[in-house]
Image 1: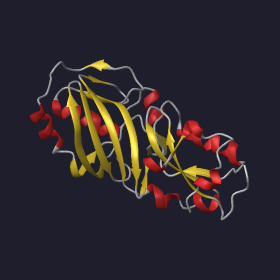
Image 2 (image 1 turned 90 degrees about the vertical axis):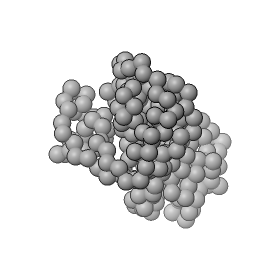
Image 3 (image 1 turned 90 degrees about the horizontal axis):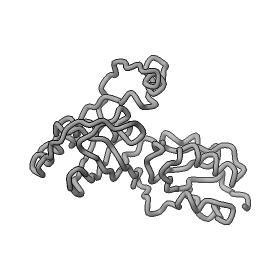
Image 4 (image 1 turned 120 degrees about the horizontal axis):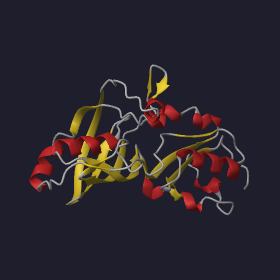
Length: 227
């Protein structure tokens, strides 16, 4: 590809499911031959959606400006089961056959509006006493985690048992997987996250992103960079 000027820029990418966030970094390094590439917020492998890729040193140095944006997700919860990771990355375990009414669900969702507290999941990259929680979790170790304060707006899209479809707008550091698990506990049904897509990050939208599958040698990335 032709050289990129103006110290490079920002590339909006729709990450594919079953791909790691680092896979995008690796792919873009190969396509651009630029080593300084980062992103403004990771997505779990099972998730898809908007990732803001930062191309070049002058943009990777601004990562905090992007990471602090609030974000919007659409997600699907599966009721009746739980997993230790709160998502599809672990074996599901039966929890309850209860089928909540729409009125029960709407009442519970009122608790997931505005400022709330949540406990970071053990299967997360958060550091406690210098150790990544997921590394401890993989050893079967669970430690006490301090609750964190986040701000969320939770909107019901559709409910057809056992599935709940939600749109969630959240502040930095919110764990959508934890919200799914907590909703399941409040409903007394159990729940885990089976689909997650990020649709917005601050002023940037998924509709403006290029699909990860389309990133190859034929794409002129220079024309898609934002500055």
